[in-house]
Image (cartoon, rainbow, N blue to C red; front, side, top):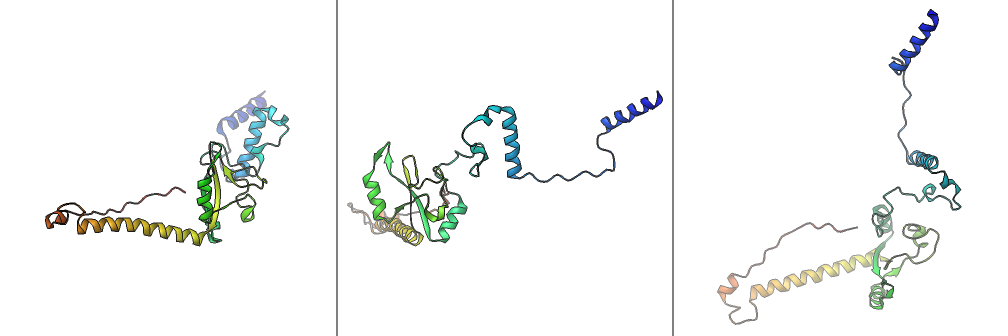
Length: 210
């Protein structure tokens, strides 16, 4: 009888005391995306056994799975890593308007062609963008709604940007010249009028969306 009481007391102490004092615990490995995905699959299978009866292969088990709430944040975004890789290879990307509510925009497409922009297919650039915006393996021009992805040499893109900067600076300089020399109105070149003509410049950082 006493032995039974002693054993019950030992079991009760183990239940209350938890892990024995002094006994080392095995270290827990940091969770990996594969482990998290596998755990998610197990939970989904346990909570919804009907998912296991689907004919199609589960997309949450594919390599393209990015996570819940991440798949629809920005439909036109290309990751900075891929943009940097393409830039190193001399490639510049841009989205252009192809259609508006299903209607072709020939003027936009004509300007795109004259600017050297060329439609991008999913198989281009060794398949770097394959599956990013459309179904993987479909060798079509990359489009999202009314937008089409185009590319041209990055050197050509830099020249175009430099030309745009020069045009913008020329517009500012011409306005400054008018203020300094007087405007084309009666008395616009009078010293009193010219002394009050001033242009103040401010520099403000503007974040350009990726």
